[in-house]
Length: 290
Image (cartoon, rainbow, N blue to C red; front, side):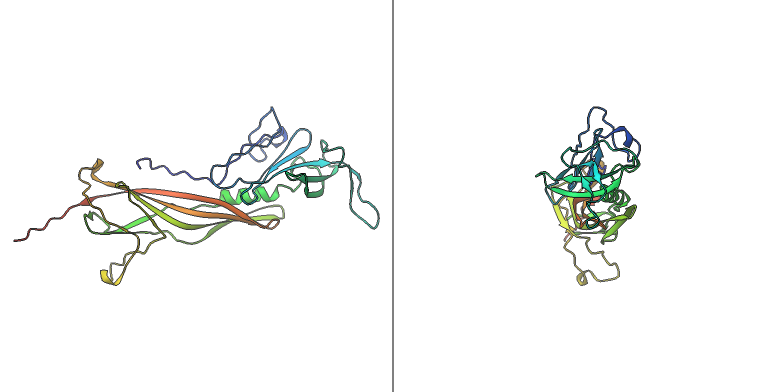
């Protein structure tokens, strides 16, 4: 309860990439290999695409709850089209992926875990965009997520100063309780990441935990019996003997997060949280009856 630092993350990845990507996307370089790795800290993994020294692409992209993994690469093109009537390129799939050369055209092909081909694109290899457009959606989603700024919780209570033992403390959040979003584009591909508040959790030092939504602001200009709230807490003891003479209250807002894009449908990104703590002074009032 005393650690008041806030931590939140949607997804984090650590990948091994060829040196040509150094500084392009800020990924970590691992000189020893060409394997795509990932680590989930909160929600499903973000899409990651990397290029290895032999021209193979590895892609780990979120797919529902499974996080489907692709294997991709640049394949040599024998002929730019099958015939005049069929413009489909003739590709040397059997020889496997090749190490691409700048400016040369290849077929970018990807297979899923079962070996089924799930993505093909005829492109000229450009070291400045080694993904050949395959990772545009992933990078746009990542950039939109980075631009998404979730507000810090702004808890409010009534009475606004000291609380009284046996009298309910009225609680609410002052920030807007609505959907927010951020967008980003990579070339012609755009992505949007949306987040919306789902619940607020209020925690007290006596062990009480109370789930609410935004709560209802107390109106000082209305009579108490004319308003009500399901987000209240009643203290049963004074904070006189607590550390610092106060009781600490923690409120955590949980946000649902999802993405959509111009290329793919969209998927959830799990949930993220924002937390704030504040002190409350609780006093006792005694009445003398004669």
